[in-house]
Image 1 (cartoon, rainbow, N blue to C red):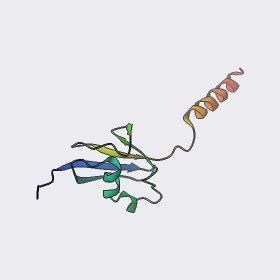
Image 2 (cartoon, rainbow, N blue to C red; image 1 turned 45 degrees about the vertical axis):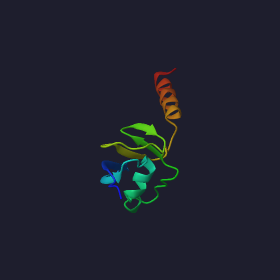
Image 3 (cartoon, rainbow, N blue to C red; image 1 turned 180 degrees about the vertical axis):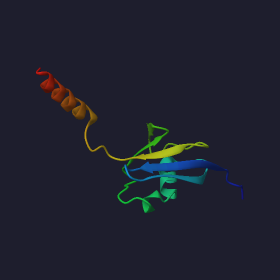
Image 4 (tube, rainbow, N blue to C red; image 1 turned 45 degrees about the horizontal axis):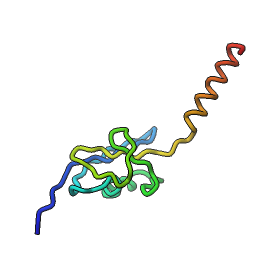
Length: 101
């Protein structure tokens, strides 16, 4: 039986009032989704749907099947509440109204 090489990774999730970064060791070849599940982060936060969540590594969106490397941090992203483009449009419209067009 061959010995499996383990790598050190982190899994991160944040809410406005609560954040967690969990360190774990996983076998080489582990994917971002597998590491997120192995971290058991869903036990610390209600409502995380790992199978449908967007995942990233150091602020870059990756596929759930992305194979991790030593030192990677898997980030679990929350769904957006508002479309950023629409928020900017509304902000610009309010500014125009204040200036009197």
